[in-house]
Length: 290
Image (cartoon, rainbow, N blue to C red; front, side, top):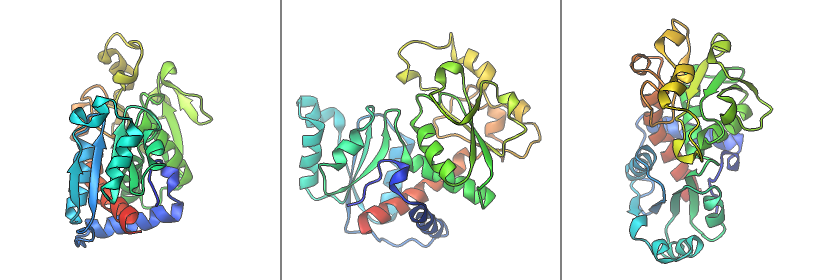
């Protein structure tokens, strides 16, 4: 059984095939391919967009969804995660979608299930379907992304979205520039800067990230407004430049991206949400039908 724990679990050709399916779904070629499939969601972290996106994707393909209420699950009674997964797997689901605050949980669960494990985000490690939908959105806009430059702006160190996109986008030939405060910069061989103004004329796209305050051991800014003064993507900063703006959500308005730019056609945040459903439909098709 193939799993999707990190973006490198899919080859470049598999991703191209995945996007062919996603494009067909987006064009309206949808049939209930998964009408005999059962998919379980196992979310140990709060989620609105990702969980809803997977649910819509599954239902559009005719699958049955089962949501495990983690607050009432046996893990709250002392049962181990692996034993919970083994019990769920014994019920015969075709896929289990997992989100957890600890890095590595989906990988561990994949060793104890026959069902496909899909990582919906684990700690600061990976969020593969987010990176896939980001790439799909970039390719939809640019066509060929090879040679395009993208600035990833914000809390790189604590971002699973950044990790997944760095692997995937560099593999597809994009040049990534990290824009981040010094304390949010992990060890890297990529080009980086602490000032967005230094690279604004070099890039074709900007991916803004949410500040991961829940993953900070200590406050790093006196306030988010202090952070925004240096790293908020504003209409004034972008000006008339032909640059598209992405964000994985949820957006801290006027902290990550300002209101005016969120309403600009160059901002693709809602397009990412739309494309996320079709990309996740393609992922579910691939992992449950082969």
